[in-house]
Length: 241
Image (cartoon, rainbow, N blue to C red; front, side, top):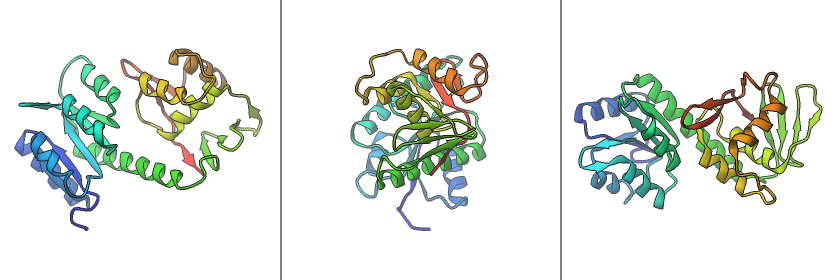
């Protein structure tokens, strides 16, 4: 285990909970360090930048959302937010809008937390590898379909090309780059804005159009599922090539 390299930081003001999470991740070969507030977290950015932050949104003196906003102002380190028992979804919605990579609601199992941490780190590594190659090479496979980045071609299960508008291509690419992860409407809107000639600002309309091309029954979607109050999730595994 490399000390201080690729470590996770657990930010929570509950000392016993913080210690339990740190110990569990350490026991699973994941270097982990604790922090109870903004000051302690900031110290972790003076040396080796953390590989991931687990951030509780209820930190007593500090507001977790403000802290997330501060992190995003200077770093793209992955952040998993933890939220409490609130009946509404405002915390996780705002957290995702501010740039959190995933969320988990307390109480949660440590096994689930570990799985989410590994999934976020895996997605980050896949993205890093993809950026080192020609961005127009390769593509993604899912449920028998294939999206080829070169030529922006979508092939159905029989290998037949399916036409995509620029907006539909950008939206599908955003989903395939972050599979099985809730994506906010704002995130998806930003993903489609980077492509010129995309004028439809309604993500819901674009999702509907994409479902009509991908889903066997668009009224009962299997691939692109609605996350109530959050946005959408591409629900199936994706294989980059």
